[in-house]
Image (cartoon, rainbow, N blue to C red; front, side, top):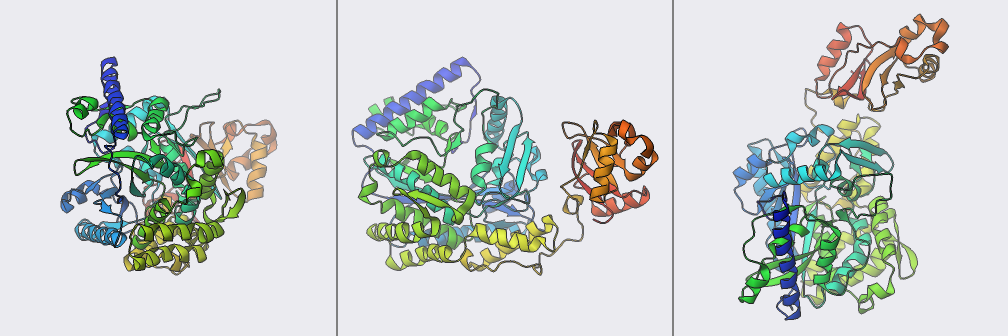
Amino acid sequence: MGIKIVRKIDSVDERRLYNEHLLADIRALEIMCREGLIEEGIARIGAEQELCLIDRNWYPAPMAMELLELAAEERFTTEITRYNLEINLDPLQLGGHCFRSVYNQLKSDLHLLEQKGAALGVRTVLTGILPTIGLKHLRAEYMAPVDRYYALNNLMRELRGREFDLHIKGVDEVSLKHDSVLFEGCNTSFQSHLQIGADDFIKSYNWAQMISGPVLSICANSPLLLGKELWDETRIALFSQSIDTRASSFQLNERESRVSFGDQWAPSNVADLFKQEVLRFRSLLTSDFQEPSDDILARGEVPGLKALGLHNGTIYRWNRACYGVTNGKPHLRIENRYIPAGPTLTDEVANMAFWVGLMKGRPGAYDNLHSTHDFKDVKNNFLMAARYGMGAGFYWGGELIPADRLLKEELLPIAYRGLLDSGVDREEVSYFLGVIENRIDHQNASRWMRKSFRALRTQMKKTDACRALTAAIYTYQQREIPVSAWRVLKEDVDIRLESDKCVHQYMNRNVETARVDDNAGFIGQLMLWRGIHHMPVIDEKGLLKGIVTSTDLEKRSEDLKELTVAEIMNKVVITIAPDQNILEAREMLSRHKIGSLPVVQDEYLIGIITKNDV
C-alpha cells in the first residue's frame, strides 16, 4: 500500500465516490492498453527488501522508527511491526550487470543500517520468519505507529467480527487465536518486480503462476514459527491466515481469501484481470482523490490510477499485477511476492535472477497455458512446494517429477537462455544461477534450518536453539556465504547468552492438564503413569482454574472415584508470567515450598516451570 494517507470507508457517499474513481481507473487502463500507450519493448527489474531488526541477544528489536530517523533515507520505510523495515530499490533496465547492481545497492543499504543501528544496539537480519519471534512480539504495542496499519488492523477485525485463527500443521502444530493482524509481521520477503508489455502480459502472468511451485521449492527458508517445525515455507500459510477477513461458519464459505494463489488462469487482457479483483473483493479503504483518471487521460496526461492501486494493495496475490508510471510513461509489471527474505544477499539476488530468467525465457509451448494445462495442478504444485520444499514432486507436462530433476533439467536451462537473450552478462548469469544449482545439489535454507534446529534441541532449550539459529544466520550473512555451503549447527554454537533470562525460556509448553469436571480418580492414575506430582486445572476455554497435586489426591484416596477434580483442587494458585525473570521463579518456588509454577498470560495457561527447570 504505497499510499500513505488512507482511511476506512465510513459512509455511503464515501463508497460511491471511491467506486466512481475505481471504475474511472479501469476505463482509463482499458483505453491505454487499446491505444498502445503502455510502455513496450523495455524490461526493467526492481525489488522491495523486507528485513528484521534484532537486539544483541538475537530477539526482535522494536526500534524501526528510531532507526529510520537516524538513517534518513527516502527509500527506507516502515513495515507493520516496529521490528521490520523495508528498502525500496531503484528500478534498473534488465541487461548487463543489473543483478550485480541490485546486490551492490542492497549491500550498501544494509551496511548503512548496520552503522546507524550500532548506536541503538540494533542489527539487521534477512530471513523469511525470524526464529526468535514470540507471542509477546505480536502484541499491539509492537505495531508500527502509522495510521494506515491501524486502519487496516481495525477494518480486518471488524470484517471478521472476532479473533483471528491461526492453525498450521507440519511436523509440529500451531493452533491459537489472536486479536490483531500482527502475525503478518512475522513474514519478511524479497519482492521482485519485472516490467512486462501489455501485449504479452497475460501470457507472462500465467507463466509466472506455472513456475511458482518449483521456484518456491528451492527458495524456501521458513520452517519455524514460535519454536515449532511447520511447513518448509511457513510464510505461505501464515500470511494467508494472518489477514483473512472471512469469518468461519457452519455453512460452506466460498469467498476467497485476500491472500491467495488464485483459482483460475488469468483472462484475456490485463484490464479484465483487474476487473476480476474488483468483482471478487470489496473495497476496504479510501483516500483523497482529485480528478477521474479517464478525464486526466483525455487531457493528454498520464493518470496514476490511485484508486485501483489502493484496491490492489489490499489484495495479496503471490503473483500480483501492478500498474505504475516511470519517466512519465505508464507501464505494467508482475510482482513476485512469495520468495522469502534471505538467507544471504547472494542467495536473494540469485533467486531474483532465476525467476527473471525463467520469465524472460518462456518457451513458446507455454504461451497458451489456459488451454493446455489444468490450473488446479499448478496451484497444487505451489502448495506442495510451501509444505515440502525440495521434497515436493510437481505435476509438469503430464507427469509427476521430483523437484530437483525439474529444476535442474528443465527450468535452469530456460533461465540461462532467458537471461542471456536479455543481454545479461554471461559471467553474471553463470555466477548467480550457479548459486541455485549448488542449492539443488546440496541444501536449501529450510533444510539447513530443520537439521540445525533438531541438533541444537538435543542440548538446548527451544528458546536458546532459536537464538542460536538467528545468531548463525546473522554470522553467515555477514560473511556472505551462500546457504548451500552452511555447516549444520551443533550444540557447541556460541550465542553469547545474556545473564538475565526469562521464564518463557525455561518453561515447558507441553503441559499435562486436567479439566474441572474430570474424575479425580482417573486424573490420579494419569499422574501416576506420567510420574508427575502436580497438574494444572483449566476450563473449556483454557483459563487456569486451579491445580491438583499428589498430596491432594492422597488426602482423599478413599473416595476419589466419586469426586471431580473441582472438588479436590487448590483454587488459589501461585502463578508467574512468561516475561518474569527466572530468578524470581526460583525464589517463589523456594519461598512457597512448592514444586511448580503455572505460567499464565491474560489468565490463560501457556506453560509450567518446575524446580528441575530452574
